[in-house]
Amino acid sequence: PTPKRNRSASSQVIIVNNVSYVIDCGNGVARQLVLANVKFNSIRNIFITHHHSDHNADYGNLLLLAWATDLNHRVDTYGPRPLRKMTKTFLKLNEEDIKIRTGDEGRIPLKPLIKVHDLPSCNGFVMKDENVRVTVTLVTHPPFKTAFAYRFDTVDNRSIVISGDTAPSENLITLAKNADILVHEVMHLPSIEKLIETEPNSSRLKQHLLASHTTCEQVGKIAKAANVKTLVLSHFVPGGYPFVTDEIWLNAVRPYFPGEIIVGHDLLEL
Image (tube, rainbow, N blue to C red; front, top):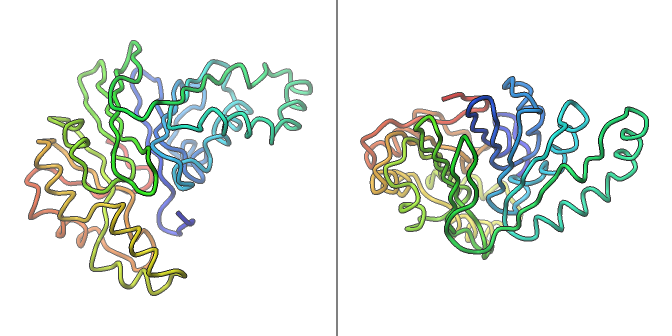
């Protein structure tokens, strides 16, 4: 969850017909979208998987900075409760800046542009527009009672599943069945002990990691059980020290999944 030199915080964007669907808003997401040449005005929807800060720290900032650039239309946001309350609090926190920019720069008010959807703690349909149909399932990421994985079935016949943070999940296997791409978090178990040595409250952190995340072996088996075409490894644990090379990640997953495996990197485009 802390900033790393070699990897940015969690966020993906799916683009269909020049419309952007953003999944998670970790620290620095606005700048990463600029580096990826994604126009802020192309954002129509934002989806949050769960409320750890490495997934939502810049949720409000993305909306604010996009609006301060060229965003001038409605954005629907989806995620677990209390997303609506978080949005309201963020707008209050930045009330002075928003007020000044609205009056001084002639911008339309930001608040009416944001339509928040607190998703119930269940599996099923989220939304559909001319480009994509989105469904959701509950995954296992204690101590959160509600954490989501999302599936996007696009009008151009792509199916993409984003796992969010999760331990092995039968719900996720069902959601990802026969998908073209599964973007899944991954944990390299042999490196965890070295990671733990550098952290305070090491025993509790280790307990959390083992209960809440998915090992390389488990990720490979999940992708195989779901019969996905391509597995993209993401949200690496550890993500900084100790450094784990692409080759190590691939070799750890390869025995368990025969399909294409991609080690994710910042600004990777598929």
